[in-house]
Amino acid sequence: MSDKTTPPNCGEERDFFVHPTAILDNNTKIGAATKIWCFSHVLSGSTIGKNCNIGQNVMVGSGAIIGNGCKIQNNVSVYQGVTLEDNVFCGPSMVFTNVINPRAEIRKMDQARATLVRQGATIGANATILCGITLGRYSFVGAGAVVTKDVPDHALMVGNPAEQKGWMCKCGEKLLAELSCPACGKKYHELAEGLRKND
Image (cartoon, rainbow, N blue to C red; front, side, top):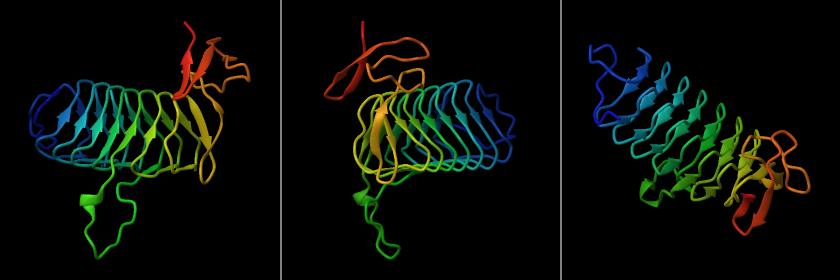
């Protein structure tokens, strides 16, 4: 992983791809085989892991952390205080927030709340994630949902405000009532923090 990046087209050899229109500030960390597409901006102090795909017009804020294998679709802002673990999917134009009650005339960044998206979670297009919450491992937030509270592992969340409407398999399919996957056959059992795959 590179500890310091330089502007595109400077002649420095890299192990990741940056589109010529993208902006990378100094003091960013970008993992091998990551691709950063047109008109995106990665701010100083941010970290992006290996094998990520950062779509068009994406902003990665200072201090934001993006794990390995993440896919961030067009028009997403990953603000300061947001952490994405490995293999998170952020759909087009989904929204993270970082201050619960912002005002234009009052600076409130000292009140920013951290948001954690656990491994393998999916966030659908145009969904909104309220700051200060955790999305569980392999949870699935439907398109347009507004998530206002913590989400258990493997939970399927839809609506505004989002409510749980079932469970999702690691492979991305909705589980049957007996907590088995109709596609891959995996079976799960329910715990307080969500689902776990049967051994």
